[in-house]
Amino acid sequence: MTRPSVARYDAIIAGGSAAGLFAAARLAQAGARVIVLERTSEVGAPTRTLIVTRELERVLGFRPSAAIVHAVMHMDMHSRARKASVTLRESDWIIDRGSMNRLLFERAAAAGAEVALGTALVEVGLEGGVARVTAAVQGRSLLLTAPVLIGADGVRSDVARALGFGAARAVPLLQARIALPPGYDPSRVRIWFDRALTNYFLWLIPDSETTAVLGLVAEGGKPARLVLDAFLQSHGLTPLEYQGAVIPLHMPWRRLERRAGKVRALLVGDAAAHVKVTTVGGLVSGLLGARAAAEAVITGRPYAQAIASLQRELLIHDGMRWALDRFVDADYDRLLGGLAPRTQLWLATQPRDRVAEGLLSLIAGQPQLALLPLSAILRSAVRAPRREEMPHGQTAWVR
Image 1 (cartoon, one colour):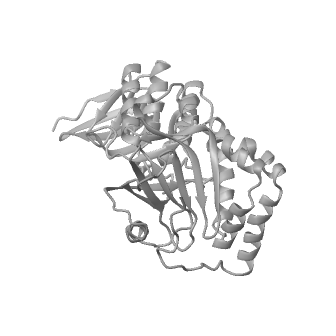
Image 2 (cartoon, one colour):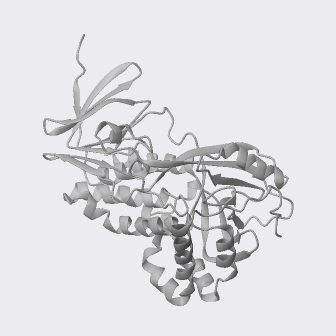
Image 3 (cartoon, helix red, strand yellow):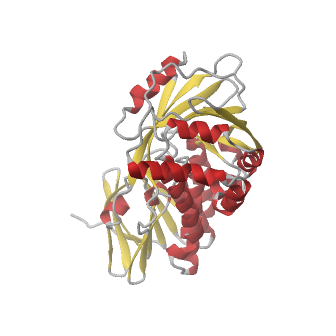
């Protein structure tokens, strides 16, 4: 049997994710010979509706108009007994994930990166001063080598598994597309905090003038489909289709780069779990990680240095999530019922992707905000948090 010839590159990127394609474009623009190996035969499938801040444009360096399907200006937050509303200074964008990836694919290809669709990784190793990747496409075997290997192949990363990075923690996300109720303002996002349903929150995000996605993060063994369907039914809503994903949770001490001599392997995007665990949003943070990875490769800097600011930001979200996991419904009532005007202004103007830079000003403006999570943490240290059960259907729409 004829052995496959060896194709040599400057960088091999496993996974045609947004992060992988963004890193490919930046490396190719710097003159590197890059190949992206994508298992699926179509970029951007399956798709999913995302909400992002305007930080997306600032990170990308251009406005991704082809991927923006809608914009929202207002956020209504509901607990069991309270409501708070915020009007954003800059509208959030609603993004179609598939369109976003196709846009980044086009830009990577235009920069000179090669993208091999329908190509599955078979074997990965760091040996002989190079990263060696065996891949399969249409029954043929490919052998590729490069001094740099970037794993951008998602939460169940083959690169992470093969090179011993360890598995990422993850939670399931499920959302249903629905028709908006009559009279609903399509510029308003709605968020519910209900510990009987999820430790996170439920969301309704309009993605057009007439439709929206309504979803939740399920954890603790709760069946996402049953919880979501019961919530939809209790509000008289019918699902048009479902969108699901497995979302990695940031692990602050996880190693994201391995070296063998001069060869480097780095993880980006969902493979690196670059996700804000407060909102489970990972598009902007994943792109920031990809940009840092490309910079580390181009300059020779350690990846850990290049992503230091991103890791600090994500660590803030880790701490906030740790405290919120100890909340009970009454804590959310107190939180939403006690938001001072200065705090509401902070929420309206501070991008969710840059919380670290404004956190001290938030606490200075309303110091009691720090006392609420502290009391929840102290209470949980004495006894396990009590979940206040409530039958579905008692949380009514607030117009």
